[in-house]
Length: 638
Image (tube, rainbow, N blue to C red):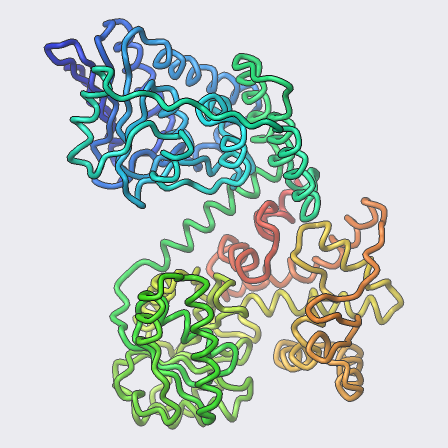
């Protein structure tokens, strides 16, 4: 037996090499550079000893191999350094592939990225038939493609159609689907069956599944290209377009495609888009970790059964909480529950799961169950006096250790808290509309807020599969504080004679989900005015909004605002404009957003630039490939 830090290598009496991976100091297996270096060393030893067979497995209790350590990507300073690293790994994987003996890899959990690329170098891939066992290539989410030969070996094993689907879209396949797609050669029922299946594979009793072939790869690629062009550009997102070019070959040639993959990966790693998306990955991981912990909440009571309150209640029940929904209108509660059923049928699908979720969501128009709740979430009208009245009445009925949370989008907690005998119980849980879709929740606290309540609210959001960020109570918190000045600047430009379509197209080209003028219409002119009166709004913009409201031009909901609307679609010219001009407009319009984020960090409203960037990506839709407004602003200045 040889001694390694992250692997255990042994040879049995029959000459079978067995290599087990257990990355030390990590809860899951990750190909950090030191781990990969040790794998290369172990494979060299195996090749030198010419085994009768080679079996690879994991010693971790969960997962298999989660790919490379994304945090180490920044260590590479040039494409040449990346290519040198890749060359060593490719040689290792080729050595496995070229062994004169049978080789088998036993997959018992998540096997993605570099882990799946390793698996594809083995003769046989065996996995457990469990939904927790998945294979795939998530690299596109980092602005990359597989770099260790994965895009090529996937084509060779599965055919171009499945390979392109995995590489281009980044969605993993569960074991059963992967088996049917020829990505896995054999399935077993459980981990306990893997060792026996490994022996069978070494003995030649498990066959490798033949790869299917697709007749018209070119048509498939062009269809994917057209779909991409409808939503982005190679300028913003070079990786998917580069992948399509990589797969646009008249015939499969393994050596040429390996070289193409290495060149493309190294080039993409040095792009701003990949840097931004890797930062987005890190921000997501950071925010998710902030939502992990014991919340001690089983029953959530929601007051307000409008769109926001109803959807908050529906999402909470969908994620296992007992929920009671209160409103002065019993009809509003019934409508919210009916809407929840539709959500469950779309998301949960299985009738028994739909019924279970509905059973957890209880109509409580009179608020009789409030006394049993561990957490109250208020989602009534954005009116200070109404909110104060709701909380004053609720405080008298609730358990003393129950959390009281407001869904206000901008009103400072200190003002709402004046109605409470114990304002330390009050926090903010600001969800974003539509609640089932948008992941961000601002967890707002004041100087009076009990810190344990703030922590528990963060953990509740994690249980709701949301991304929570802490914000100190201040007008607009973080997202609306940053978003509204950006929108108002665009409105002022239009009032000064600028073309709204040109402004909107500039920001869409930049990567925003929609332009600021269209967003203003989408949110509602009245809502924008109300929020602006809390966070600050110029007299000229306030006057224009007031005139529009009086004329009935409320935006999308009235059918007209800055644009005319055809249902949910704004009727705007969508003209063709000079790219440099659009870049300049986007930078000008985004200046207030960047400035407010900087100010929020300086004032301690959020704890760091990372949190500000994360909130803008998850709450505003700031393009992930730009890494957040502060990261983008700093990057373009350097």
